[in-house]
Image (cartoon, rainbow, N blue to C red; front, side, top):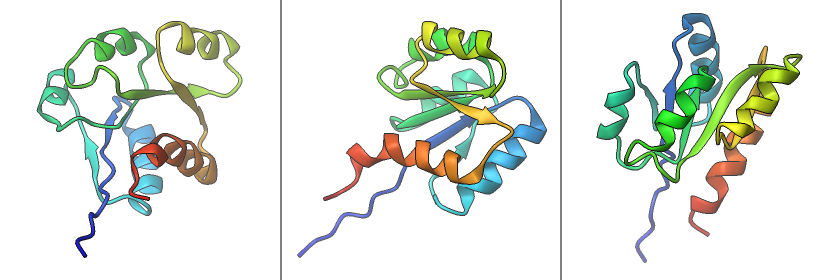
Length: 121
């Protein structure tokens, strides 16, 4: 019987080096297919990422229109106490947000929420 290995495709499009380092450390403990992308156009080269995590709400609309990103879950990093940004996150078309400063368990839980439909049963 042939088994398929699920490799999550998570792209980190984060400009803040400190935030990127923290998030990468949390996610690398759980996922092997983690990509750090520094230029929006480089996202075109990824084979249909499942999740894109960004720290720029301004990028969300641009990311949503970028093949193969269209249809991908986009999570925005937002300070937990910034109600205006949290509201704008959903208005721009983002799927969800990750509260900063990060609680590692919450990052993994939210990531799993969007990866689960793609896992082999």
